[in-house]
Image (cartoon, rainbow, N blue to C red):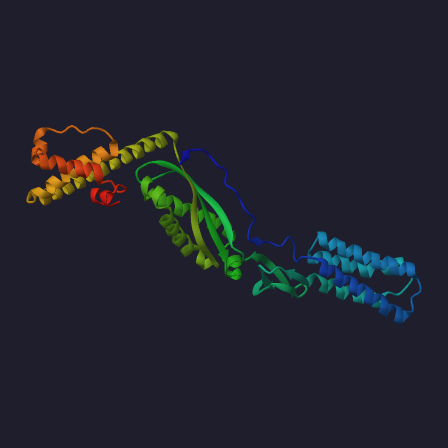
Length: 368
């Protein structure tokens, strides 16, 4: 958690590219124009035997300049204006009859704008005379001159949009700032273009609304501890709204949850107190388990004094062996262990002197 502060919302390019004109005059279109210019000049040369290279070069240069104009102004009125100039200017400027070449140029300028190359991840929505015709792509497509138009180039790859809910109140009236990400993709280009005007903005606004609603219906503790379940809830809500648009919401993930500084300190103290409480509970539970174990051990030794005496002797021995010091015990302890007599003292000496793991027994020493 961090202190509450403002963050700018990032924006991404739209997954639908609206055509700037009626078509996209591209490299293939220019090559088509060049091909028809060359073919027209060749056929014109065979028909009329033109020998004026200057006139041929000027006409070809003018045609290529007109093609360059279509890169800047990709509109059918521009094409019609170019064709009108093609038929009007050469008879005035040149004394040569370019009728055959002009016919080839006319066909070339009508066909060339119809060729487009669509990328692998794009779909193109085609309108014919203003009505939906079909969805094309990827690859090279051809549009009928003056009849077909492109409604939009749709990017069908997975997209990501970030959205946020600023100063939203949780169920327990805590102001929070939440940043989240929505991963989504277009699965139906026709619906995405024809059903909603700006569906990217609609997706973001729908996700923001669902996020604010989810924040308002949950406490802060739930918001902090159950991010995945809340993300799935928001994903289902937004996906149900965007599916009629041909869009599916893949997932919604929380990036950051920010709370005010004062509340952050209070939550830190609350968490510290909770950890202290848990540690005390664990300590008390451990003490109870130890006491229960001691009680079971006492029940075992209660009816077996010999075992209790042996356990006491071993405790004394382990204390002397491990610590290397002197153990002081009351005389009553010696009497209870039957260590006051000569036999008990001898037995204890024998244990203390020869019970080490690496020391040989007295019998083994004498035999050696």
